[in-house]
Length: 118
Image (cartoon, rainbow, N blue to C red; front, side):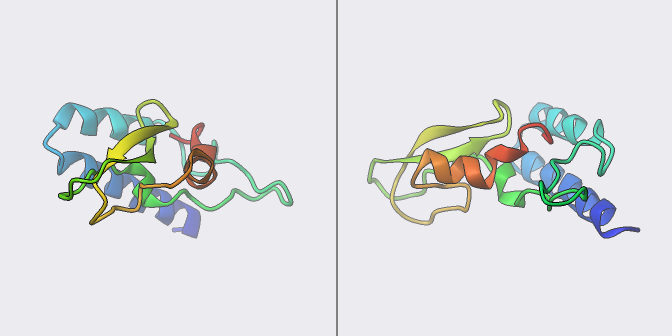
């Protein structure tokens, strides 16, 4: 199996696992359908300097926002797979997950360029 196909398969499984652990089966099914509908390698963004597909997005782009247990009220940004864009959320200040960005630009640079993939 090619590296790209293996990466796409792993991303699909991770997306299903992340979505199902949140206790929302409807969301899990919707996200998996979005990933399965796209044949690996056909709709991936390409590296502008070559014709080969770019690397897959980080798996943490699939994670929901996580406020954490602390009580601070900091505005942060996360990539929302449903809206396919970066959005604000209130972060408590500790135990951050990776889908947690200081600036909208950082979020879009990391996860937002994959809007057409999702």
